[in-house]
Amino acid sequence: MAAAFLFLVMVPMSVLSQSLSELGPGIVKPSQQLKMTCTVSGFELTSYGVNWLRQLPDGKIEWIGVVWAGGSVQYADSLKNRASITKNNEKKEVYLQIDAMETKDSGKYYCATRTETD
Image 1 (tube, rainbow, N blue to C red):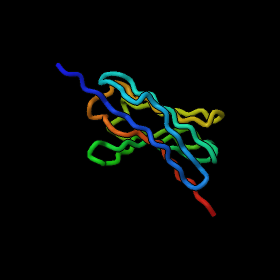
Image 2 (cartoon, rainbow, N blue to C red):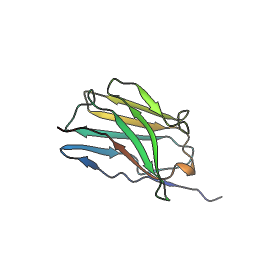
Image 3 (cartoon, helix red, strand yellow):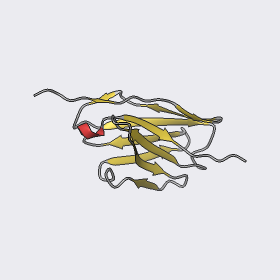
């Protein structure tokens, strides 16, 4: 039986003077656990929420979840039993963990925020 691989590519995203940079393993095999880190700069995690999203091979963007400034977390219904989003305000890092990865989880994973300017 041929092994299937999940190809995960992380691309830095920027919004004005704020930036978010993802770091992850690159490739995760089915049934393994995905762990990614989003490091932010230019804003405080105590002031803004950070979302995790993924772009599927067909180009569709899928929302995974968000950790809000106050620390509460919301997940997409399809992933709420396998996904975990946490953060460390002092390190300016937001973490994504997805258990029991499946072939359908293949895609590019991103973190993103919305900050407002005057």
